[in-house]
Each structure stands twice: as C-alpha cells, then as structure tokens.
Image 1 (cartoon, one colour):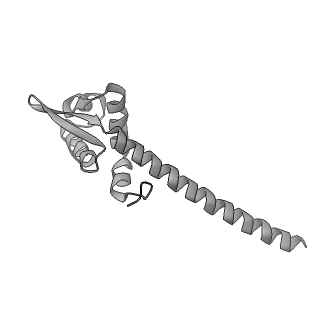
Image 2 (cartoon, one colour):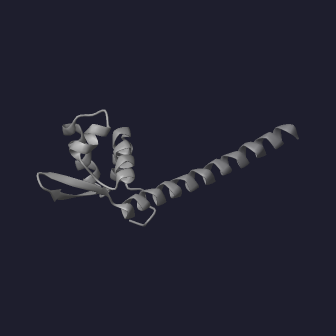
Image 3 (cartoon, helix red, strand yellow):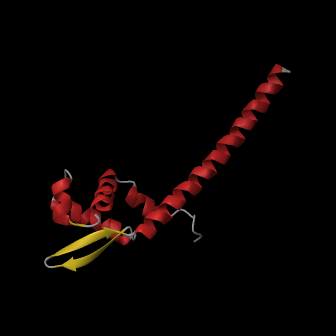
Length: 113
C-alpha cells in the first residue's frame, strides 16, 4: 500500500465522533487512561475501553500498563499518515470536480453557440 492509499479500517475508526473526541483529548493531554477519558467524555469507562481498542487496532493509539490501568497516547506518525490520506483523497476529488466543471462549461458554451 502506498503512503497515500486509503486505509479503510483507519478511516472507519476515525469516522466515529466519540473516537475523534478521544483523540482530541489525548492530543491535548498527552496521554490518558480509560477512566480519565470517561471523566472527560459523555460515555462510560467500558465504552471508552472499547473505543480505545479500535483505535489501538489501527495504530492510532498505543497503550502501556501503568499499575492497574493502561495509559494511552496518540501515535503521531499514524495520525500524520491519516492526514496524508485525507489530503490525497481531497486532491483527487478536487481534480474530479474540476473535470466536471470543465465538461459543464463546454456543454454551456455549445448551447450558447
């Protein structure tokens, strides 16, 4: 897979609004546990743990054991990879929309002529 090929599992994980908020909190605080995240988000600790598992599976977060809990932090390289994918998809859609615009303008010119 190239650096800008779309990773559907990664984007499926990022697509969930709760997981995006969790990433925001982790980026702002540097790290967190399921307990600390559940105190900052409107979901239970169990739900946070399940969301963290999904984020961990796609490599967006990594956990280390700290006492009885796992402390999670964002993998900035994987987040940068996701941003590169988004930029690539955006550029692709920009090119498609530009082609559609050119076709529509050509049709309009033909109708006016």
